[in-house]
Image (cartoon, rainbow over all chains, first blue to last red; front, side, top):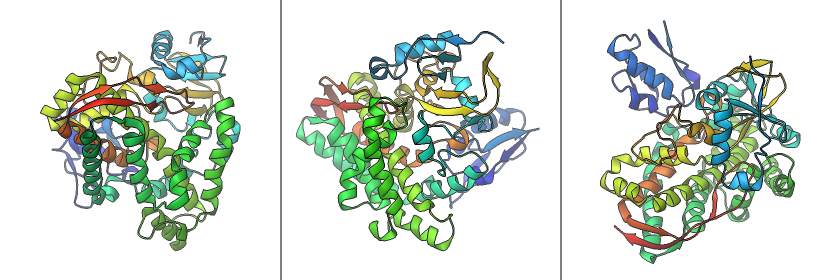
Length: 63
Length: 390
């Protein structure tokens, strides 16, 4: 599965980073960086949590 | 598909507005979608139903987010009442100055203001929590942020309250508040950069309009939404936090022992008593939700508090538990229209809860006063008859 970001929609609330710190982070400018876009196995649960928690629905998981 | 579930409840009845949770529980157990003939309204009651609808703007349009045609007409052209793709650009202009990255520099100032304000109140031994804290804090933060001064600053509270009331149905509350909301509307349509303090975000929005970064005429709309959406709601949340910690001293003790719970505690305050109890959408086509047909053109009412207390989603939902960390609560909405000011709301809420946790050992409450209100549910008076310093 691949984590996809709708960049214009992302407002940098950072809840995804709290849910999946190993997979994504906000950089020094507050822009979201997906560090691990392709996820499977153990990472999938964290990726799902990050997608779910985004308050503006800017993240999704695509196969 | 089944026959639609109905209830003879009036969601804007005074008694329901003051304590809606028993009614929410009945509606939620009836169905995920319930038609209320008295309000000509389909209400959404369960967590999943609400969240899915909020994330489907094609089916559930925001063009009738209010519950009377006059207010919906007046809101046309704002991001609040528009749908993608128009919404996308308006939203970007609205949220540009409100995102966490834009607000980062404010955290220190907001935390310090909260510490000082709470410190002063604790030193006094007793206080009235709504005027002295819940209203005083966001009014000052938002006034400084947007650059309101003088007479406008004095009108912020009544304008902000009225802007919410008039989203209701055409009842007495709405009609009494239209002239006041009209003052705000009128002021926002004539306000210029010079009316706002130099260096403020409000001034910056006008500069963006002059540069052509945002469409002509939108600066006033944006100021309107900052004031209309950012005052009454935050006031409700802060007042609720004091009331809930007063009622649940063991939760205040948990917070004092573990300052890392601040963010979870604010999310739980918002989940437990959402500042906004009903918000509108309209169906753009016939659609089936949870086995019920919602016809094209129907008015919907989203009951955030009903969804936040749905036992299908939250275990033991009627217990106030600050260790729960319900980050997915519905009180900021969700999806493309999710609260644009939630970053600022978190800064303010976290600052106050953190200050309470550090400085307060015990809150003894007198009797709270509530006044029925169409859209916002908040406490009108909350005497803290005794506060014990930590």
